[in-house]
Amino acid sequence: MQVELETWPSVRRCAVTGVLGLTLLGLGLPGTGPPRASARDTGPGLARFYDQRIAWSACEGLEMPKDLQCGKVTVPLDYAHPGGKTLDVALARYRATGDPQGSVLLNFGGPGGSGVNELAAGGKEFMHLTNGYDVVTFDPRGVGRSSPVTCGPASLKIMEATGSDEAAAEPADVLNRLRDAADECAKYSGPVLPHIGTVDAARDMEVMRRALGDGRLNYLGFSYGTRLGAVYAAQFPDRVGRMVLDGVDTLTEPLAEQGLAGARGQQTALDNFLDWCVRDVACPLGRDARNARDEVERLVASLDSEPVPTGFGEPFTGQDLVGAVGQALYSQELWPSLERALAQLVENGDPSGLQGFSSGGVTFPVREPVREPVHTADRGDGGAGLTDEEDVPMDNLPAALMAINCADDPDRPTAKEITGSLDRLRARYEEASPVFGRYRLTQVLMCYGRPRGTDYVRDDVKDLDTAKMLLVGTRGDPATPYRWTTQTAERLGSPAVVLDNHGEGHTGYASSLCVHRKVDDFLLYGTLPPDGSSCGPEDPANSEGGSG
Image (cartoon, rainbow, N blue to C red; front, side, top):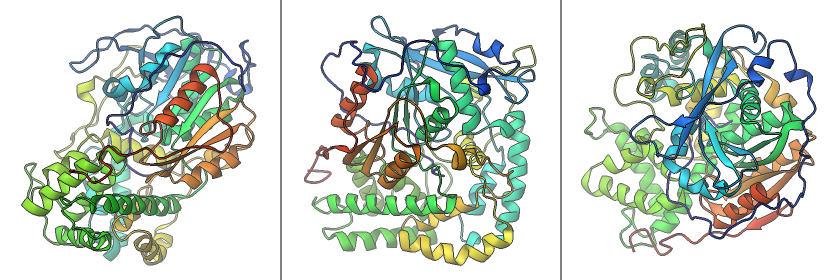
């Protein structure tokens, strides 16, 4: 449950070559007959949602590929009261090139990332799957065009409260400000906010499966999308088809421990980047790895004391640098660009290259957010229709990330408990990472003032009785450490098959041709690699240094 502004890394990836047929090998596959109904999905009032069909049409928007189709499904706002208000969930798909064997549903992570926009931008990476499937994705409830949540002006208040030294010096004041901000988030987000979270999003996926006409759910989820897939499998075990979880999230660790894991992972990724950088004569941090690590720490401290001006009006601080570097470390393919961006900053005082990482749709807005509550379109029957793309709030990604993670987390320490443990936590975070520790510590505070989240993910997603599923863990992953893959596999039980990727970056499908092939073989053929098998590291494009 990473409280981390992360999405599918939109960088060039290796394409998989060769032609795969549509033969079903049947290894670990469910039957093709209709699944058994369960008490969860046969309650009164749900039939009208399960019986709908999707009307597909060309996606609107200047940057939408011409062959991408868009649609929607209608879901209950509150599954406990399906006869009440509803909302629409935005969908997009690429059609199969031949006779499809069904659909494969994608979730790119976040939480809070728009699946529709991600598929529009990076769909070419999944074209091989159209040999057998319609490739489908969606904006989860509260995200993108699906009743987007927002904190309005409170988004800047949250950033100011947690992005300064006040969190350490005046924690009680910061907590009061966060509680007030939580009230504003509720005001500006509207009725969807109490019903956001992975448990409801997984139930929406069951509506999608039925509307798509699939007997089982075939699924490929990345990062947070692995949590979503696991929750779906726990809720609807008889509906699981071929499921792949890549960059496996934790299902059990509290937010404070997740932040520590993230800090350690990002520090390891930074160390690996610096080991690579100093082999290049053009590395702006010198030729010695230890000195380069010290230089990064000095640079962060210097920018926090004296930020540099930018073209956006807001100065570039040390914590801005930490956030930008953290985003760049999600993919080894970004290392050469990160090296050049750091050189711009160190040699010319120009942070624009680093801002390119931190402004790629994964950070707080740089201009003033909306001042009035966002009203999702009304379909005319009292339900919430899709929001126009231009009306999606600028802070929707961070607002949705906080809302979903907090909805999934049952822990709500009191102000006294937080302030009493802050010094100890700060020491642990700084030990985990002198660069990323402070940046990650603020996530411990993010859910303060919000309602307590569900126990379901932590208590009930375990010991599954489903078809086999493939879990991919990457050894150098800075966001979802490899141990989460093995821990989650043990928790899920006998269906889990682990693929060990000895590579760098967040997720394996994005960066490893070996992982790419094995995932596609499973989704298209049903061919699973042996449990515990591995993929070797991929050679970076410039193995001798970023510029050379």
